[in-house]
Image 1 (cartoon, helix red, strand yellow):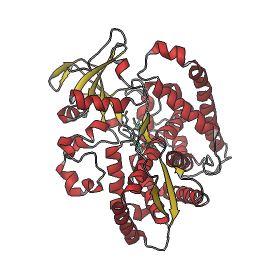
Image 2 (cartoon, helix red, strand yellow):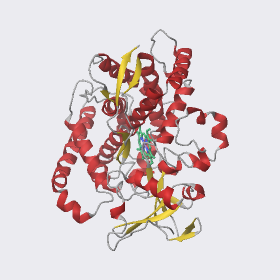
Image 3 (cartoon, rainbow, N blue to C red):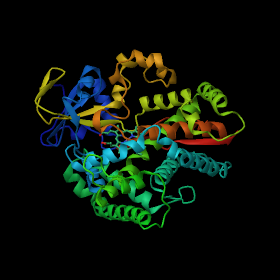
Image 4 (cartoon, protein in one colour):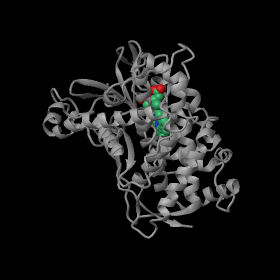
Length: 452
Ligand code: MNH
């Protein structure tokens, strides 16, 4: 199997990887080394897959499954056996999956729609109050929005994101995520030497996060916050149909932490990238607005639940954004048994990293203009003409994203409303650079919002 050149004793390829932008570095390796190759991070070997038929093989659930390895495994200190970080065999996964799946169906989005719409209005009002100031820090504002949405729609809890400049919960979460992400493919000895401050801070952050979440749960249990038909209520009241058991307190805490982490950074990154492209493409904005006027009307009316599904072009903007910059840019799989991959023999349990960032720009699947932003790639006829494995921003198999409908509904609604209320003006000369912290986001993206 191919591998990067200049591999060193003991530390393997660690020096050739980029701890700050690991997935973007691996994407460069795909260009250099091909669809399948191996990297060695201080003795642990990872097979990297970035395109071609190897991807279709690895997506086959009968031969491969999700692997919980670092950096995802590092998050277990925080979210334990919560849905995202559970090992496939852990009973808490199946139980929580059974209880929560119905709460994430398309129809269930009706329950969250008004809360989502309310949060989007608050974002727009927040921007309106600052129109004369310097351009907005888009990633940070999108984080406010998505955290507020998952907090309120999921658990009836507000972070007061549009009132607070800083929130200790958000800061602790950001540090904890960055800790889990940074310690992924660096050299352990150097981490002890240079990372001592973060090593001491991390347990404190985890304690604060856990404590806050326990507070949210206790408030609902004790009737201090109103009962509403949301994710939290479901976890407190609905037994797993298979076992007849309610989720344990520990499991509910892990799920709440999981949703706060998995449910906000990803959607925020997606919205930020989408606004970046919209700021640069007036023709795409015009087409989106024509559709929005058609579906919603032009009198500034609120977007209704049923209208979101009709905003097909806005949805294609989201789809295309998730192609170029899949918010979760890579995920891990493992071989269920001794097998072969692209003809190479691999052992049972071998770890495989699927690099979506590379797959989603594979010229053989997307053409020579694969780096261009073009929502029409997601016209139904074009989607049908591509193989199913070409596009997997929400992962594959039993462990694929449970929040897909939630994220798509929120993203389409937010973009529609933003385009109704504002012109999105780029900062001249801005060059997109992308930072990674398990998820990806545009770095220092600033846009001017002008009221229409
Ligand atoms: Mn989400 C799993 C991408 C939004 C909750 N999510 C995954 C996986 C990908 C993913 C990829 C699979 C990872 C793996 O195989 O290891 N998720 C996204 C993207 C967005 C997103 C690109 C937004 C855009 N996710 C959301 C939202 C929520 C959420 C919103 C919750 C409200 N995601 C999850 C959970 C899992 C997951 C929970 C783990 C599911 C499981 O393993 O059962």
